[in-house]
Each structure stands twice: as structure tokens, then as C-alpha cells.
Amino acid sequence: MKDALEKEIRERVAELVDVGRDIVAKGLALASGGNLSARVGEDSFVVTGKGTWLDRLQPEHFTLMRMDGSVIEGPIPSSEWKLHARTYEARDDARAVVHMHPQYALLLTALGHRIRFITQDHAFYVGSYGYTPYYVNGSDELADTAAEQVADGSHDVVVLGNHGISALGDSVESAFRKALNLEEAATMTYRALLLGDTTTVFPPDKLAELKHQ
Image 1: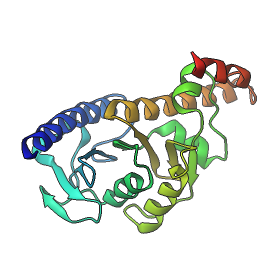
Image 2 (image 1 turned 60 degrees about the vertical axis):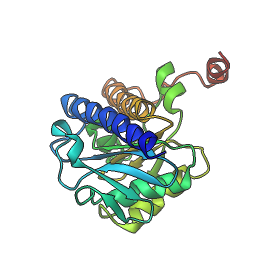
Image 3 (image 1 turned 90 degrees about the horizontal axis):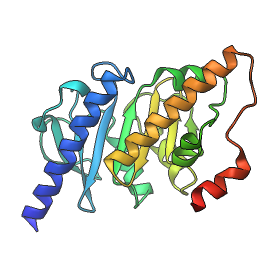
């Protein structure tokens, strides 16, 4: 049992290292802006350590901890560990959480514009998103309100006002894919607004057909 858990930890950490590198390479966060986690077993998770740069992650930069915040091993965890823990507690199906600081999603939301899902990937992989007003990073208010937005399963992605986004998935890849598609939807919404378009979205009547396929 212990060997299986250790193997799972190594695999999830390797996946998170790759995602962290991609996030910075794509300009979706700078330096230590953002944090990543994956559930291991049923009552614990690995999360990036405090102050770690996402494109320089190594296995020793991850903290293994319980949902109550107690550290099993590793460095001091990210100040956002509560955001990850409360998300896992709210959603049994969540196996990974990606928190990053994408420019267009944050800009549009700060300016009062709704992010529109324009392509089939936006509609299929994200479909909807939740929102929280600004709360100080690492606070109970931020963690609790973000968890409330995903608790009933209607959203897998939350825009954290003036801060970042949080995306959950049944795998590291799934969570990252949702985060990427939300930011691409925000980028396309921004460009559509520059062209004077305020209404274009993926045809709602086609979404059920797409999911059925």
C-alpha cells in the first residue's frame, strides 16, 4: 500500500512539474504566481511549496499534506493550500487543481465583461464558470467561496476576482485543459469586443449534441 502511494505521488508530481513549466512558457503566470496540486490517496494531496517558481519546480518543492492542513512531509506549503484543500473536500471527483493568473480572464472580469465560450472546445471542456469577488490570497474567505462555486458540480473553473483562476479536474491534464480553454475563451472574447461584437457564442443547441457524441 505504501509503495503504491509513493508511486502515485511521484507520478502526480511529475505531471505537475510539466504543467508548471507550460504555464509560465505560455505567459499564464509569472515566477511564483499560482500554485498546483493533485490528490493522492483519498485524504491527502501534494501541493507546490511556498514561493516556488512554477517553471523551476523539482520534486523536493512539493508538500504532502492532509486536508486539515497538517504537513506530512516537505517544505512549507503554498499560502493557497486552503484553496486546494477546500476544493477537494467539496468535490470528491476532483483529483487535481490548477491555480494560475491568466491576463485576459482577469482583465475582462475586472472590467465587468462576461467571458464567452465561442468554440466547441470552450463549450465542451469548460461550459460555465464561477466567480468570487476579491479576497486576500490564502484566506478562508477565498478558499470557502471558491469551493462553494464548484460544490454542486455546475462549474469546474472559478475566476477569483482581481487575482487568478482555479480549475479542477479528474486528472492533472484535465484540470489544465480546462484552465487553458477558459483563458483562450477570454482572449477570443477580448478580440471580439475590439471588433465590436458583443453576442457571438457557441450555438447553445449544439452543446447537447456535442456532449452526446
